[in-house]
Length: 118
Image (cartoon, rainbow, N blue to C red):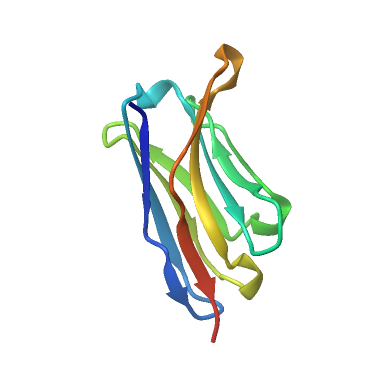
């Protein structure tokens, strides 16, 4: 079955950096669109960044210039490099895989906690 396993979360001070990883199994990783979502306490889950199978990327406005999404198809892994972190980036971050055109997915990981605090 499909498994997405996130790692790399933790506690970081404002202005710091973290890199999240999401290792996928059970899918042909290279053909899936991959995304990172986040959910803060009391808020709805929101899309943070997405990367298509061809490598095109998009970001929510609040993280543009600070976060970078990338993928390594040889390792079946998608990354989210987060720089200049702010307290408002605190949330549980979830990995997502889908092929919407084919109604395949979405598949979700279990989430990893990111806390930005001094």
